[in-house]
Amino acid sequence: MKILVPVKRVVDYNVKVRVKSDNSAVETANVKMSMNPFDEIAAEEAIRLKEAGKADEVIAVSIGNAKCEDVIRTAIAMGADRGILVKTDVETQPLGVAKILKAIVEQEGIGLVIMGKQAIDDDYNQTGQMLAALLNRPQATFASKITINGDSAEVSREVDAGSETIKVNLPAVITADLRLNEPRYPALPNIMKARSKPMDTKTPEDYGVDITPRIKTLKVEEPSKRKAGIKVESTEELVEKLKAAGVI
Image (cartoon, rainbow, N blue to C red; front, side, top):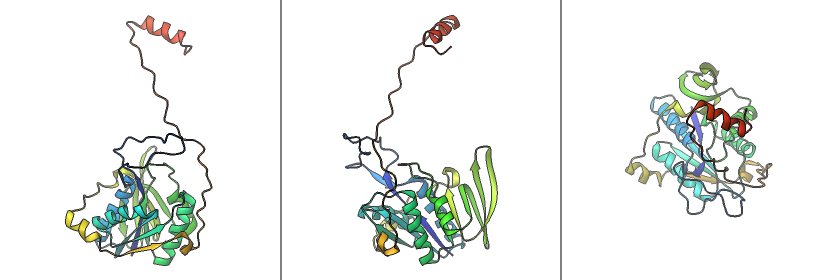
């Protein structure tokens, strides 16, 4: 079985995000970038399944500009076998990404897609669900545990009430949640070896997919700063303050 792991290049989660002076987008120039944390968890899980003998090959794919090669190389250094870079300078959005992933799944004969539940830059949480719908395959979102049993997968998933365990037939699409695992740190020799591992470079046109954005960002602003609070000496003073503020 082949496992496909989509990985996205995003602003590193440790970096304080800044908005461009023209309010058009988030500043990414001279900012540390890294693999989306949820995608990193998905890559780790795919590699563990391969190490356990449940998969034959792990393929990492990223869609974006040439710099996205970095996150593919990181996935390979972790243990993925090869990568696919779908090169484009057009802004990627969930539906376009899902269409490209669908084409790759069909071309490569992928048996399982494991991907992050969302990216920390846009927080869409849509691509996995859209991909499952386009492929007409079962989906298990927000996975906190995955067990492969022959031609099916048992997935514990996080829901509002706690967790639930479901069984899905393979091939399927699974999205990884935070508690699925703790990703490994690639060893230096593996990082060096990853530079020579195979990577195909494609374009959306190679898959016959139009990724023209359907959503236009009009303006990006930082959240308004929270006003400083005050301390009160008694319950009576608290009530008076709340009344003055029109809360009660």
